[in-house]
Length: 590
Ligand code: SAT
Ligand code: MN
Image (cartoon, rainbow, N blue to C red; front, side, top):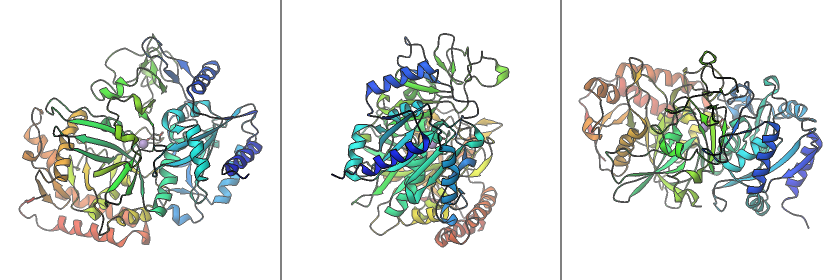
């Protein structure tokens, strides 16, 4: 009898013929399988065991020093038409891309095991969840996918029921950067990645499927696949608002998602739903309902400490994989920002010498199951997802951009998201600290033309819709080279204002760029901030914003005629208001 798994079996056969592995292993996702993979990697040196007394079942993986971050210049969207990929992506014609990459896959698994990883992105019984199958020759990828996704038998059963899945083919190849490509074929729901074993290049369920391919599908099907954390903010009265927030990689999504409210907030609680990816869809009530498609965290280690993210630190003392961190003399994981311990060996396994740079790679990571997070929300497993009250955009901006402002409506919010800029980080190879536009934090991850993506966002504004309010935050404002806002737990003060705006309980002042809190609208009790610093954080530098809006116009024009007229009109509205003589500030209500 024909099975809905026939297509999967045929594809695995076809890939085995191409890559010629010695063995094929279908992953069941069991604990025993995970332990066997760990044993294998301890034997091959892919993993070393960390101190079992302080960190039971924790392992260190050192990747090839040339393979420590996503490679945007080698990442392609291979749609039939180049215009569909847009100027925000590198494009290659599908036939050419297949030819090029298949030549690299030919025979690449000789002597290796081919692993078949069925996985589900999202709660296994959620209508919003989607399945995929990754084929890889990397046991490290299998182990990470088991933590990051719902992997194994249950996913295979869903694939058998539905008959459809995203195909991801991955091989570490010979790790030669000259033979490294991450290719996406959205029309074929297919990903092919070779030459890298690192994070977003290799764990294909994450950025490749859950963002690039999913964003393409989401556009066709009327939903959104976004680079956002999701958190629930519960008040002492027991009311919970869910908030989704888009920040570029390594800008604090994990820290915000796991925030512990400071002493000034007795009875408040932050619940973690996700720290990186959010899939949202309008529900029958007109609200946007969101799930986290992932089951674990692949977080940046440096900077994670008891002070900055106690919830994260607490989940990292057992059952975790560390990638490219340093080690103490007694084999505990170590990275810059940890107040205790000191490094004995750096991320490349050399005796630590400060002359070689940081002990842990700036993009070193931990992989850990979300279930280990003390603030993990029970609603994270809810098949319907959670209703989103607010969407926050934010980047690293050392000047100009205030601590927080509210967009006046959805259209303005889409402009604010599209115009987002941020200074680059170590999460991708290339220069760090350079300001670039990163619309909705999706520049590296949107699987289609940004102009069409902006139009898709605008399209959610329908008469029956009850859309979230949209905000922009900036934790990274600097004066004299130092951060002005304390950040971390104190970001709770901004979240409180945001939720207050959602339920109409707190004020703001209208400005051309949006509504800002006045000092009295924010709980600033106990913060060591003087007048000059508050002016900086809560002020609007009109001349600076006029220049910023000129830059935004150029950026929107760079997408040519496909840029939605509505977005350009919205830009012109704000631009003209900025140019008009400043009126007396008006309080914005509700
Ligand atoms: O390497 S990943 O893409 O998984 C992490 C990130 O850059 O956000
Ligand atoms: Mn990310």
